[in-house]
Image (cartoon, rainbow, N blue to C red; front, side):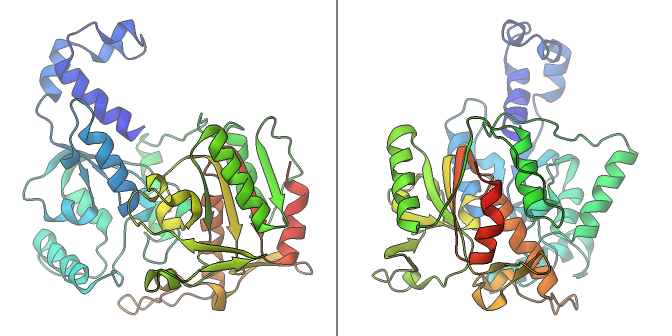
Length: 376
């Protein structure tokens, strides 16, 4: 939707009036000479917090008439911009950061410098959302709190405030349907309810394949077969194994059932990289992407207690250091309940990447037994 909107704004400014009406009468009223004059010089940008997705969208923009790679920005580029934008569209706005330890010392310095530049001082309560607000006249935020996956993401209470404020101004628009997953919006809701404290009854998903595998090699073989048939089929997993192959290319990261796999060798546009079919993508390489078939490995970072009927995070088996890092700058410590929420969100994202089907392997026996009845 974000890309379509920016492309449409460029087309309004350049396409002669009446052309669009031949394709979609619902939008034809926007293609008028007076509106074209108003939007032709707009400074607009698409902000994407995730590095991998940003690189992929940048490629699309560079090959699309009216758009350019320079329009695809990270939050730091917005904060450092010397001019304000007329419109910023922020994809995955829940992934904007609050003040927290960044991946590098340089980014930590940049955070402080941008705060001082825009607000006169390095106030640690300032977030990247504040940068967006200060640097734009108008903005559209695409928000889904259920896809916050790290402690550094915008706080839940701030996201709720954003939504409540938008509702109060009649500027809140809920996505009621989607055409991405073949099973429809019901599948996304189905997965989220399965991963909640109030599970649903088993649901029929029509042609959509939601299968539980008890052997990882069989899942891998099935994903390769689906890729040969329809393309764009990949294996992804929760961050439940150390990334040994990052420093030792000969090492394997995930070894189960005699199946040896490595984490993603590329951090940008991994889905389209040459070896991706034979690797495993993490949440940081797949969030925001679509696959035809997704093979999801649920590791021992998430467990299920059959007595209490509750999910539990296994901190020792969760290997994303930034995913469980406390925030001493803001005086925040994250307990196992907080960690479990982030891990459940991660698997909620991974389990809804597949357009045509999702294949699942579960390490924890109790969790596998819990999930099995929901499969098709």
